[in-house]
Image (cartoon, rainbow, N blue to C red):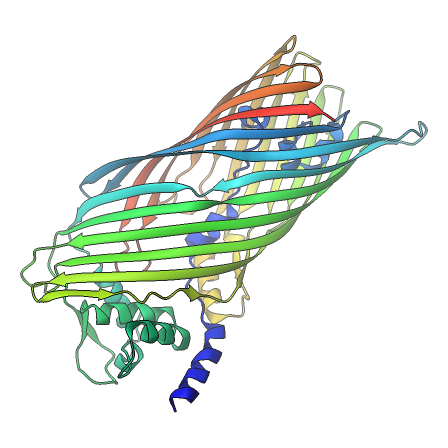
Length: 507
């Protein structure tokens, strides 16, 4: 009978999916091309300009602006500083890393047939890092009403109003913690695993000690819970674009990108909670969660640039949705203390979840630029992106359908504006820019708008150029600790500072 049960569990594991949420969709839908120093110093306002390797990621027609084959490589220091508030507690954090953020080359082929209106075409390959997940912070405060016990109690009593059976969140006779945790997760799912942790650590108790019991109580009660929450993440989201572009009469430029995307995201969180309440039999809890996410995706881009006059240019580009395939692994650890002793629930199990699919929203960008001969230029980009169009797939799945409804209700269309300028004096270029990006959430008090500015310098040595950029942006956000029970949020005031150096050269 035991072998038959194990066979059923093995088969059931193919439908076991970790509960994704709106924040996952937003994390992988937001793209922040860090780009070359020239691109960054003008706040990315390059949709109608081209002639820069990172501009290819905004408008694929941009590579056809090059007159000569070109390559560039960029390195940078990327910093994030946070002011963190959690109830009555205030902390700060500072993170920085040094990395290669851009690498690319364009080959320009001139049409020697002078009677042909198609003057040239280009082939390009460009890598840009579009998101940086490196982050470390700690929040501390006295939560007046809510304990981590509500997390386990919420799962046990049922997030959908239907409590879980005791025999579906507890170990069979003779089973180890590792065996029970693994089998419960495979056979019943994530919710039952969380309730199992709470039950085995004595945080929750059944109202009746029977297999059919579906109601539970918490052994953590009262007020004023001293909580510390530690967050650490690593990883990136990268984009590799293969580009083809062409020029018609040197007045119309058309291009297409075929893009490959990469996700690598690691996150570890640790909550420490203590209380001295008389009606709490559990006085201390340590709860750790680890997540590893890897994925790959595909998208395409179409774009055009038109020289209305020799000075005035307009651009239009379309970014398709990105279609991702994503895999996740998790592990957990829980320890509790009480006057009667301590309990450690360490399953020492890595949950490997079936691959799922995510479709991020498309984006349309319109651009204007005015070039003052060799003296300088002004550029403006406007983009629109409907984050509510993000979808977990297959949409026929009941769980994914519910998440997609939450995405539709929580997220909104976001507009972004970028303005950039450049002034040239002999071989020296002075640059600056400003950008504004609306929140992807309908409730922008939860996740605020982003505002930023940038400055830069460049020097043209003839066969190569050296550019430097400084940019800074600010955004206020809230981070919700857990999706169930302990749903209180940490408030962030974040400042992002980048310094990028680019070497570009003719090839």
